[in-house]
Image 1: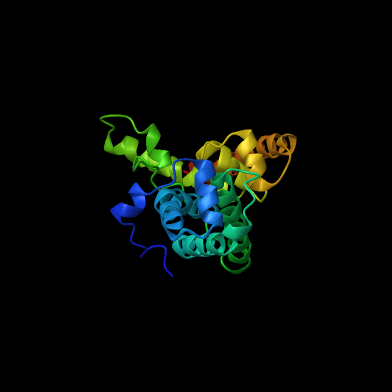
Image 2 (image 1 turned 60 degrees about the horizontal axis):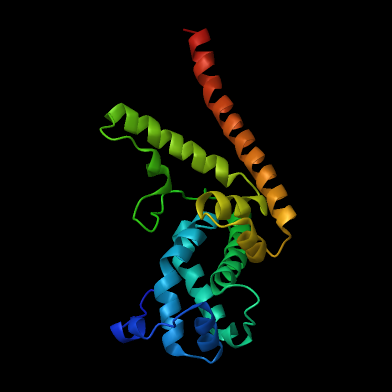
Length: 218
């Protein structure tokens, strides 16, 4: 089954569960309509989330695996967390497994260029109206540097940074997704931000050194 090719008919959308509890009940009962509705609702958000944690090129395959696991384990979903945080918990597990494999084989940077629900990339939110070509060049370079710095933050700090700073989850939701206490989440977030800041400073210092040496020898 390919989640990319799943067709969500109008009838499935109209038959969508009235609320979170109803959706969970229908998923546990094996409702195909509820599962299709879940895919229609969360496929794009999960794709963006996974692409930020793992290899963007493999995000589609990872998300497909996520929904396969959801389909197979739906009957055992006890509703102790929301359906959304349950989905993100599975997606986080799959993405982190892939990221560990990816780093062992060919390290790649996490992409921040995936569009949000409005079709706007995260880094593009800072774009100024009427920006000059030079301004655009400088902004894109800053995006690349931020992307590279974030890619240097190790797990589990990387995941908490993405969940909080990019996905906008609350501390309670993040605690459910990463299966940790709220205090642990806050601690990881603080350390992750500091790691990101240090990576940013290191990259900038490394980039500035050749330029400084060239000026010395000019």
